[in-house]
Length: 113
Length: 111
Image (cartoon, each protein chain N blue to C red):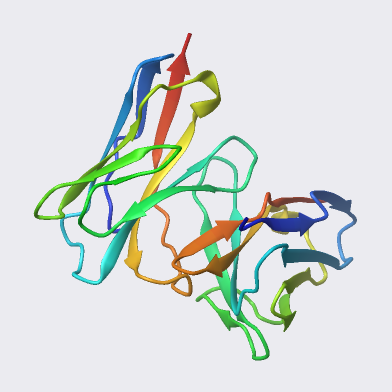
């Protein structure tokens, strides 16, 4: 149990386009999901906290208009990178909470050309 | 900032026990110790967590000192697949709290 999936696993896009990443909790419901970003050789950095049915809470320095988060159901949260630029290239990871633990998706690698 | 301190890297021979230390001297009474690991280019994997008692599951054992200021993760029989970055995180109980990630320990299992 406690499986979290992400789709797509990797994506390459042109600068200026938008990319949507899905995060699903497959065998449990999660009222809270988290979105992280990880640059090469660095640790995970929290971008935002996504709560089902309400607006996401963004960390300082993360542009909410650029990284749109929607948590429409208890099993699905989406992150849309709008007008992506090469500096947005990174490894994006989501997590979902179950009982007292967070479980992580496999990550989505984004490359913006 | 992360509330934990871990050695940046460690080596361990395959088949031996890997003991990964973590210092968390400022841990609060309501905070648990969580351990995750991240294998290259994958999402983090939950390993184990505890409050003050020692814990064991199918993956590892967690030893927490009596004053709770440090802990040790033990992988009893390390395999090559255990090569990963191991993160020790302290966080309040519950899945709705953000996890603050430090640099972790790069564990390399050698044949």
